[in-house]
Amino acid sequence: MAATAVTGPAELDALADSAWWTGHVDEAVAARLRAHAAYVAAHDPRGAGRTAWWLAAEYRRLGRPAAASGWLHRARHHLEGSPDCPEQCLLAWSDIADAEEHHAPAAARRAARRMTRLAARSGSPELLAQARQAESAVLLAQGRRSEALPLLDAAMAAVTAGRLDALATGRLYDLALGECLRAGELERATAWAEAATAWCAAFPDNPFRAPCRMHHVEVLDLLGDWARAEEEARLVCQEVLPDSLDRAAAASYTVGEIQRRRGRQADAARSYAHAHALGRVPQPGLALLRLAQGRPDAALAGLRLALDCQSDPAHDRLGRARLLAALVETALATGDHTTAGRAAAELARAPDTPLLAALSATADGSLALARGAGAREPLRRALVLWRELRIPYEAARTHLLLAAAERAAGADAAARRERDAARTTFGRLGADPAPRPAAALPGRAESRRWAAGQDPPRRTAPAATAE
Image (tube, rainbow, N blue to C red; front, side, top):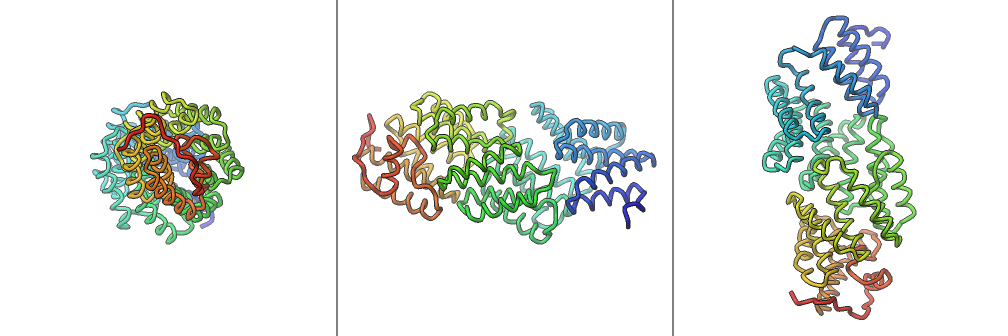
């Protein structure tokens, strides 16, 4: 049917959906505006409220918060006094976001419970799965993992079983993967990223392709499949829609991370700059690049600003943990054990997922190594965790830290074994072999000789003892 012949509100809604699914965001918004006017003219408050809610969501994604706020207000006005219905469930979803934005955890929890209750009454499996995911996200942000993860698993069981429509399926893959990565739930993120990739391959022209691919890129980056991660990240930038530019920013940042680890500093700087231009704060990668360039003061300033600017640290626990781990490393490079100790202490208070625990143990070991004793136990614990998580780059870095700890304790043969294990992994990854942790060895030149297999004179850390 030609667009000019479409006049009924339901037909206009369907036209808006069709335009959105085919990537024509402006046409989708225009059709949704016409649908809203048609529902109002037909005295259909639920239809008007639903389209107003969708317009609020789309304007928010397009970076137009004032328009989004106005349309959300209209949605509430249309649905005011309406009995429990699916549209009220959508408003409860917005209430969750509003409470989280205003750092009101109790209000977020109440709204999440209301959304789940309304969704269960609606009889819609799509709304119920989305409500469970939303409630799990609220619980995770409040540190209530034992309550959150079963809800998330239940929501994703419906997704992976193919019981939901395409819109709910794509949205839940996107939301759940982001939730898992922010919380440090790598095992779930890996499994669902693979499932999302397979689903997108079966529906190649769907608008969730770039978001799901971006989450897969993040998983591939962690697992050390860097060539594939770079290739996928570049596809994200080609596929991303105008209302999802944050995904292109994340892809550019991830490419910069890979380039930095491989010693391609100029390329990394350009990728970080592109990510920043698209709205992504390129930390902690940019700070670690500055540290590698011999500019620790610039690195510290960037990390402190990024930490101070986190409006809700609980929302992205992995992001904050990475900033804190980089702060430990950078502070040790300047000899500031006090700052490093405070950052390591905060990192130790993070929820005990394997990924966050590995970051914490590595930070503790680095700090102990710099102080001269007690480094081997936390570094060995960190190494076990990195291996279990199958994150090879961080495991190799930990091998080098452990090598330095073994040398300081006089265990030269053990030190060489740890160093050689690191060199093997760095070679396979194509990574820069110089150890990044400044606490490991006294100078960058000696670090490169040690990583290359040349044994400089052994340095004994003060007060080092056999462990």
